[in-house]
Image (cartoon, rainbow over all chains, first blue to last red):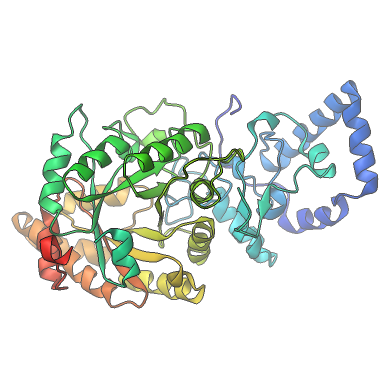
Length: 162
Length: 306
């Protein structure tokens, strides 16, 4: 969706640190209040979103889809998959775990599986991810997350509607 | 007997694959379909296979239907967004196409238009989920009501051999949870690896919800095998297969390929939970009777068996 085509990126941040940060950054009343305030002020929102972009691009190769799946993908960004699969991996993964489109890079889902499994979180990969909302590209996913807008991104219950 | 009925009755299903022509005629499809009619339960009509432009899958499926054979319309997520995909299901269902095989699709990079925009608006799990909801809940992805709802039998694909191998049965589990009622696998060359995957699939209880059709291909030559190994994403050919084919003179390699395919059909048929085979023979459809004859499964099709 963005100008740059998706390319698999191996995260710089270790999965263990990321899972620990996840505990600290869980939505609560404080974060919700903070996110609402930031979002309400144009310049603050632009600054905050820019900081998020900078941090997450460095750490995860983030492409700012605005609806972050990292917490349940072993902190490997699925939007780096050339097919942008949220429910990967596809069937074209090389025997060495390489991406079929970028054979010199590792498939993000192979990476995700390894990192999640090492942290006893492989079960996360069974969750069903709903189609993304393309209107959210470029938005801060942290502001969305803290304000509860990401709650329906995935489900463990297949009887729910997509 | 339809594919759905065959699988529901516990019979051993056989499907094959037709790739539509690069041209504005359905004649090659009807010809092939007619020749396969007495041998298979249904034929897949590929959706711009390998990201190469071909006659549309829905049109090819209609052509198959006109010969009295059941089509399996392949639908990839590569070229159409969620609006077009849902619209295609409505059209297909209205015209009598019941079997829909959902797959992510090859990346455009591999085809004849490598500069095309890759769409991938939905992935295969999301598309299955969407189609199932349209059929069962009578609603679109947007939540809008449908009237009447489409009737369809939903299929998926899976590659039991690609990394992360430990996750492949779970990945099929996601597709089954999303709505897959049958699955056709990637080429099975490594039968023991396939059997290991099947054991995991059974452990997850998936064979009770979804019919597993093992993908079996007829190799025509060492050269063709080589091409498949190095150019088809996700296909790994074990060394012993190469060695076996290299041992026979080139003129006999096609026959050896059929023999090999028949043996694999026999072997996978013995694995608990395997509901049938999917013969990956696009472009080599005349191999279908030879493989099935050799496999001696005593499958009656044609006028009596149907």
